[in-house]
Amino acid sequence: MKLSSFLQTGLFSLVAGSHFGFREPAGHEWHPPVSGDSRSPCPGLNNLANHGYLPRSGKNIDLASVRLAVAGAYNYEPTTFDSAFEQAVNFNLTTTGNASTFHLADLALHDAIEFDGSLSRSDFYLGDDLHFDPAVWKGVAENLGLYETGPDMADRYVTVETAARARAARVAEAMRANPRFNASEAQAQGSPGTTALYLVTLWDAQQGAVPKAWIRSWFEKERIPYREGYKLSDTPKTGKDIGDMFQRILAVDTEV
Image (cartoon, rainbow, N blue to C red):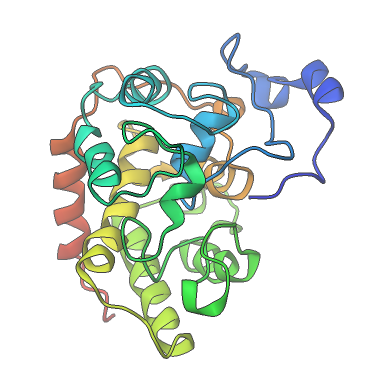
């Protein structure tokens, strides 16, 4: 996501953490990417680089750094994403010259890990599957009700049911817009998997839902929503948590 229009790093450092009275962890303040940095189609990975849990350059990422990053930033068991890392290796996506590392942008190779119907990116056939697409996101955000405000819980949180229906609506829209929409295994698993991942990562266990403000920060700014109150879960998250959420998403009736 291109963030050159945001505050310059020096000014930002003066106000970081002041919004809503919450602060980002020392050494992990959010900074947007600069020219030459590498970013992926995945907001979750980009967030890690923007906060320095992964190399801020987004380059030459190895398995050890992924393990440290997902544990430190999101409180996942360190090995939760080992299989995803191995996928990147097996698909030979890397352009680093070292088969055990990759640059974040390497993950944009179409229909390997990247897939059609992304929540925040356009399809490869339509021109750019790497960068945040405001037009794509607008429809998803509207279906999530992200800009509806009010005193009730429904005005402040996104439920599993709402997230599942927004995902299904996005896929349907992509299929209409893209005559070469590829309903591959990567797409079939990746689409609900992406929704499961952001829900589990940002889950507010007390509310049984995800704060809308956290989702906006996650996707629109590619910033971990510390300033909106995000904090680590009491217990580490695991691949089973993601799998269970995946099944909850698939169980939602998206035809209503």
